[in-house]
Image 1: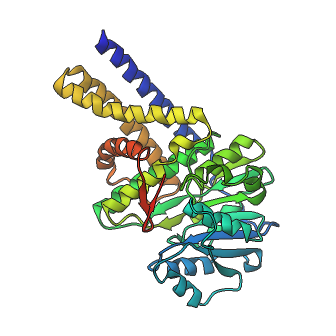
Image 2 (image 1 turned 60 degrees about the vertical axis):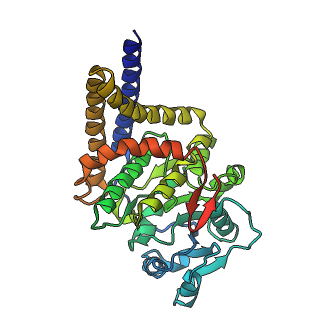
Image 3 (image 1 turned 120 degrees about the vertical axis):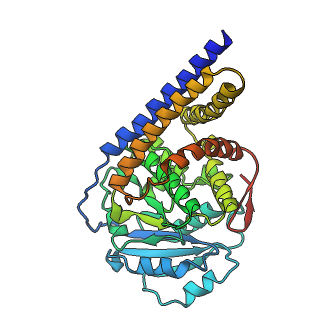
Length: 378
């Protein structure tokens, strides 16, 4: 009897996961991929937090300078967040257009929520009616800005844009690239079915009015992360504006994969740390169920080896569904956004994905993490 009850429980987890991933796949198909490029009447403010990006800052600046959007229609504000390298000197000394300015955070401006405080300081000192956020290590295509903001209409309050990791030669780079693509596509698909859950502040935009209407980051300044997802969820919850995903290769922003396993661990721990603080408690429950699905994959494998072979069968069935469903999502994303070599390490990535979700699901709940040479409290 206990074995039967456990099998029923595992079957319920599988059915929920099928429902969840199928929803993402359907959502991807609902997102428009073609948009008429246009210059908005509203002024745009691009806000870029900056901390210790000496190797990347000038490349980032060059890609920002090369934007096709009319320079009199937008401003760029770099917010220096106590950089300890020569990032600030490099960008201050570089030749810049008149619409680019650099601010430094005051030492007494909000003690916590490091990235959020930089964005908040930028918003408080910007002229734009529409805010665009990106990161100082990102590279942007010339039509990035005009493509991203062309998705606005009067009903839209938040736009999530696509991000990818730069191609690397190492296997570690390729594994990170496909895993990160899966996160971006999951966020896109959920927006497509009007259930916005995850996004990335390296490529996001929102109306200042929408930001102010939900009190910005005020109610979650105790969290060092969440400047993107929690704000998007709050705007959705308020019900005044629509949330969109910009499904367009020209809007694709390129960032760098982690160089070491330690950096990867700290980054993913930071990303996972905010999940239990989402405002929507039903959403938290769904994330817990997804975690249990992955956790129980490991449990089934162990039970199959040491207790009963029936659990090897349930494991193989669940893993087969996982492979088929996630391949479908990634293949669709490859066709819509990413390069054709994205899926090369797919099978290995699928195997590693199971302990990855379990480890970071637990790690994100407990303890602090390292970010930009800081020890950050969750």
